[in-house]
Amino acid sequence: MSKVLVLPLLDESFLKGRSIVLDNGLILIISGIAVVLILVALRVGYLFALREMNRTKRIMMTHDPLTGLLNRQAFMQRLEERIREAGHDPLTVVLLNVNRFRWINDALGSDLGDLIIMIVAQQLRMGIEGKPDIARLSGDEFALILDHDTAESRQIVMDLIRRFDEQPVEVRGQSLQILASAGLAGYPRHGRTASELVSHADTALTQARQSYIHVVEFDPVMDEEMHDRLQLATELRTAIRNGELSLAYQPRIDLATGRIAAIEALLRWQHPELGHVRPSRFIPIAEQTGLIVPIGEWVLETACAQAAGWNWQGSEECRISINISVQQMVHPDFVAVLDDVLARTGLNPKQLELELTESIFIENPQKISKILDKIKERGIRIAIDDFGKGYSSLNYLKRYPADTLKIDKEFITGTQSDTGQIITASVIQLARDLGLTVVAEGVEQSEQLAFLMRKGCNEVQGYLLCRPVPHDVCEQFLQQFDLQQMLALLGEREGWRKAAEDGSVSPPS
Image: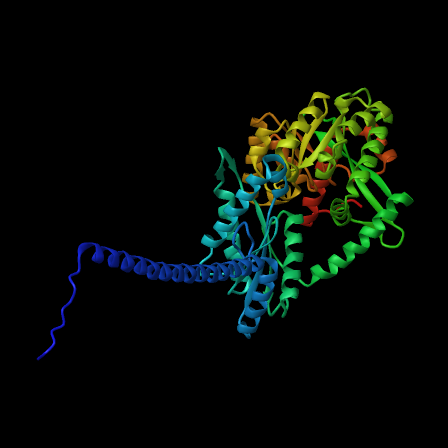
């Protein structure tokens, strides 16, 4: 007889208990899986974050944090790589400096300065075709590697800087003109290592900034000049102590009245071994080393004292004209020094004229404007010197309280051509329309003088009329000068010259 298996009935309470046990077990399993997944996710996230942190760290080590461009160290490494890859193909290293950046930082704030740097970086990226290596080497200096020789690279950089000039940027409601200078050095002609190329490009950049030229290509002569400048800077300090500096004086003639309108004080250096050192050689060195401030104060006091002691023949309109550098002008004590000199020498402020070059207005326009207002309050006249030599702009003449415009001698030399005459005549007329006294510098030929008289130039200065002379000779010139006699003498000389050219007569000895 077979046995029958009888299963007990499963009531509801039994099934419910088993269900609870099953649910709890499933929850534990799912929870365990979730914990594992979370741990895996955390581990993956950590590894990803670590990788990103390392990548960011590497970027920070090789890139400028503000612009994202290469930093100096990475640029030098990249340049060495490019040199190895180039073989005999040309490369050009460009160092580009944002002019007057220090003024932007000081006057408008470092945050706006940072914004300008980012704008320049962006324009460098967008303004050059291809993908050149670009770096920010310091606060206001950038570097580029271009796959061209220096001639083609020069044109590329010139076009870039010209766009900076022509397209002012709008920053927080202000229109700012970005001015830049650049120095170039080419591989392999100017160097075969990264350090040589960067050093030579930096030398060229220094030359560009000093000469107010947009782009300068390195020349080996510049290295020799740099060594000479360092030696001369040392000897210039000795020259101040030993009294080797002196002043020469050159009159300016008023063509309307025939009288001497002003006398310019010109700095001279007689070196015991080198002899006469040209001002164009030692004055830039004095400016670079800061020696121009004590030298300038000596010039100011010496010239004012000399002028106060001269017999001006009763003419209070005649002035002593003194060149002032940007370093002197922005010095905190400049106005106080000026007052002190005038008080000690007894010179009437109306008999003093300060000559400023255009570079002064570019470096720190807002600060300079305030200083000029204080100078004008004292009755001192302001002259813009060497107009046409640097960043020439009639905007400076409208914005600043200038009285006199001195046209650079290159304009006067250019009057030998029709185009030069048109340009010079236009500058004279524009300046006169602005109410400025127009002075022509470097007048050396009677034809130039005749042209300037026809075009309404107010005053002239140059070797044709009087060379720079010592103070005693200048005082004699003051007492004896007669424009009509001089013009008659010049006319007589011109007649003899033309006759000699015709072969009809021999010129007088």
